[in-house]
Amino acid sequence: MSVTPRWSRKKPHIPLLAVLLLVFIACSILYNEFSIQQIHESPDHAPHSQETSFTYVKPNLPKGASEVLDRFSSCNTTRNYSGKKIQWVDPDAKSGRRSRVNQESCDVFSGKWVFDNTSYPLYKESDCPYMSDQLACHKHGRSDLQYQYWRWQPRNCNLKRWNATEMWEKLRGKRLMFVGDSLNRGQWISMVCLLQSVIPANKRSISPNAELTIFRAEEYNATVEFLWAPLLVESNSDDPVNHRLAERIIRPDSVLKHSSQWEHADILIFNSYLWWRQGPVKLLWSAEENGACEELNGVGGMELAMGAWADWVASNVIPLKKRVFFVTMSPTHFWSQEWESGSDGNCYNQMTPITLEGYWGSGSDLPTMRMVDKVLSRLGSKVSVINITQLSEYRKDGHPSIYRKFWETLSPQQLANPASYSDCIHWCLPGVPDVWNELIFHFL
Ligand SMILES: *[C@@H]1O[C@H](CO)[C@@H](O)[C@H](O)[C@H]1NC(C)=O
Ligand SMILES: *[C@@H]1O[C@H](CO)[C@@H](O)[C@H](O)[C@H]1NC(C)=O
Ligand SMILES: *[C@@H]1O[C@H](CO)[C@@H](O)[C@H](O)[C@H]1NC(C)=O
Ligand SMILES: *[C@@H]1O[C@H](CO)[C@@H](O)[C@H](O)[C@H]1NC(C)=O
Ligand SMILES: *[C@@H]1O[C@H](CO)[C@@H](O)[C@H](O)[C@H]1NC(C)=O
Ligand SMILES: *[C@@H]1O[C@H](CO)[C@@H](O)[C@H](O)[C@H]1NC(C)=O
Image (cartoon, rainbow, N blue to C red; front, side, top):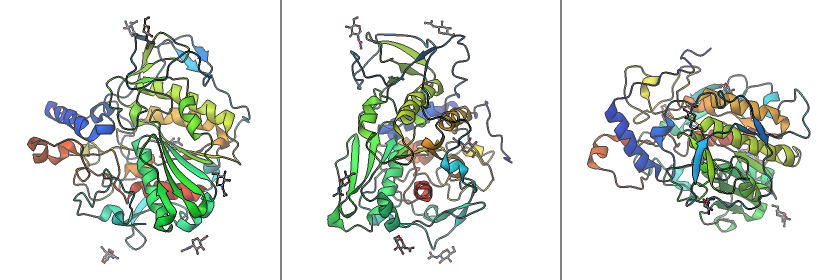
């Protein structure tokens, strides 16, 4: 089915200069985001291949003495990963049950992008007062606007047409909460922009940007919220603004700090991925009182975190009362040679989607996807998968590249070579995340 190799262990050949430029990118774009250079480090190997015996740890135990992690936390000592794993069971598990999304006869995640400038964009960038300067590409100088005009067309059926009033009716009296990293925040902003136009200006409000940001619509008694929790579990990166840290420390066995904020939401939309792609993470188990950390590769750390998260979902979600979605990894487009051999650019100046069916870039890690698939499958109908990876892979044209606000001053060298500081991680709005939200709407 796929024409390109879906996974290659060979890294693209990168000249040293390019690597150095990427280090600059990391400093400029990533003010509050990820290190691009590290995201493209070699993929993680099977997480626990060396260990022979495992100890299982029960997650999400109310904490005793252990301190809350913040950006000043540090490890007293660091040793190799001990092989401890997360033990979680679904009290309601029945074998062979699949989630509602997966039961659909039509796979809405497989299809193609169709140019449609009559129905799209679903809103105008300048009409959304909640737009982020990180995502407002037109405002920041992008003049080719075709990226706004693409509709996702599933192969064997149609997506439900977006209708803001209908969505509000579904949300009446409810809390919808996005939980995750800046990609998820982009999807939240997209949702707010999609929804806000039908609410009079004096009947809507937004709370100041904090760990939890809340958009309210009075007449529907409904909220659309975003909770910053890039690693799902508690970590030293939980400050929504100051989280650019050299050392990533997590409590692999606890989501309690964040779940206390998300537990009363009616509809939850989670994501997590890119923060696990920046090299090894330090584990500080909740039972550990002396700052003794263990070190583990990113995908291994993510597997532990997904276990702690799954434990919460398994024991707290009643599918008829609470909907939980998990959004799969968002692709990056840093190496144009992956879709056009011989070229040496990135997403900068890309104006059309990739048309090669099944195209898959090296930024979307297959071992991570398999691990996520395994965890979500075990949760059965308690979670619905929003599998955005393949459809977003095609959209090399959808990233801000240079057309966004950068927080640090760009040097003349950078300005002379725009590709060197392009953001090929996030997505312009209106754009690709609007479709992710149409998928949510489709399944609600
Ligand atoms: C950690 O494991 C690696 C590979 O198994 C080994 O080479 C290294 O010596 C270990 N380090 C410590 C501190 O045990
Ligand atoms: C849509 O695109 C077509 C072809 O590019 C163009 O002729 C037409 O004017 C566009 N319509 C709108 C409403 O932008
Ligand atoms: C949108 O949904 C509302 C409420 O369900 C309905 O009254 C309206 O006709 C819909 N609009 C369109 C264009 O389908
Ligand atoms: C508004 O919604 C909340 C739940 O989000 C509910 O507890 C409350 O009773 C609702 N208020 C009204 C007036 O319906
Ligand atoms: C590090 O060790 C010292 C002395 O044993 C202890 O007082 C301190 O609390 C430890 N740090 C952490 C983060 O646990
Ligand atoms: C998402 O879709 C891809 C194919 O596009 C598939 O390989 C992967 O297993 C799916 N992931 C999940 C979690 O369903």
